[in-house]
Image (cartoon, rainbow, N blue to C red; front, side, top):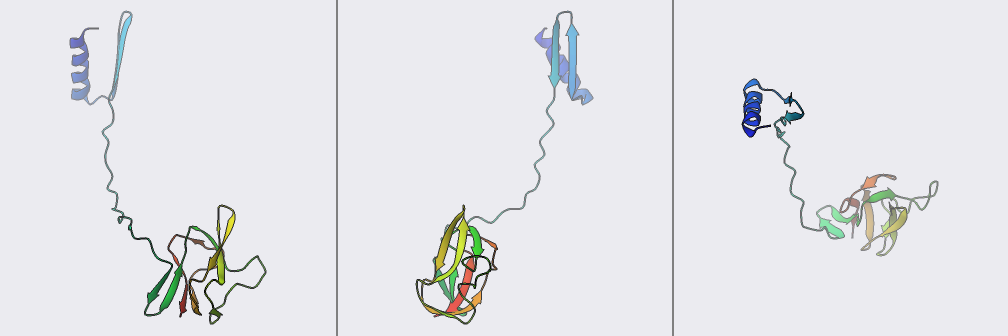
Length: 140
């Protein structure tokens, strides 16, 4: 098929707003298909991820905060039906287990990085937690 005929078919598609056309001449055939224009949807801008890595305990006017060192499921007790590792008002010492985070079927103990009194437990048993998420608040 002659290139001039193909150009005429393209012009015909544009003028007629056709999405596809197929022409057969004897043993020759040509099929032309237009792509639909891509319309970009407005996507709300996500805040840029912070390059800052949170440190373990952060001090605030309300007390020190223990944050999660990983993503996983938080467990307050060693196993279902047992007493939790800690309770609000309990005094803990550095290195004492505060809870467990299950990540990829591995149980990872969360240990206190300093001594103090637990003022608040910021997560619930069985809750999925994120890296750097505050878990406990205590006063030193």
